[in-house]
Length: 257
Image (tube, rainbow, N blue to C red; front, side, top):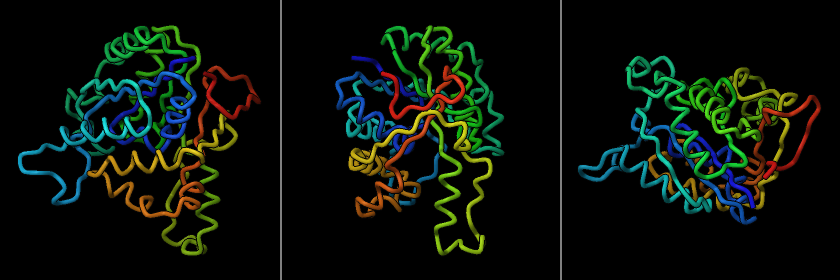
């Protein structure tokens, strides 16, 4: 059996783009380790969700543990870096923000986990972090360097399929004339660059349970929580990756565990 390590920026990032492969790997008997760079302290949270004296960072770490349990994760490793906030905000300039940490120093910490776990496969993000978030971009840089230090060869960049998103938008009557349609031109990766397309439709209920666990992030997950399972499969039943060591034309339907 293999060891899968998924490296993410914030609590809740694990659900959308790797939740299915995490649950599938765990169900197949592989060991799964989830590493998060930050505590997500700068995320948005609806009024009334936090209890008296409760911090968002503390709550999100508890939610992460619950989400990890729903997905079958065996170990959660928080690196506790400072959340950098969304791109273009003043928090990006804080010297302790994850986006500003020395890549080699952070990579050495992650590499220690990879070596301890004898990781076979590691997931990170593409070079734009999926959508340009500073912490996601830094996950890419730190993850690439850490896998070099630890000698892990099978590295996958989890990504949104940009062309799939365009097809979904085109099929939505509300956006038929292009009005108010989301701009996805810089989101994720074009289909031609994706090497690994994983059908995780059999694990969408686990993904939904992980979404429910992240109660403070209902703004992101809310639309998915009441979907019939058929619609949920269509929305989040496929996960896409670019394998970093792949040769031109390489295509696969599962992570190489």
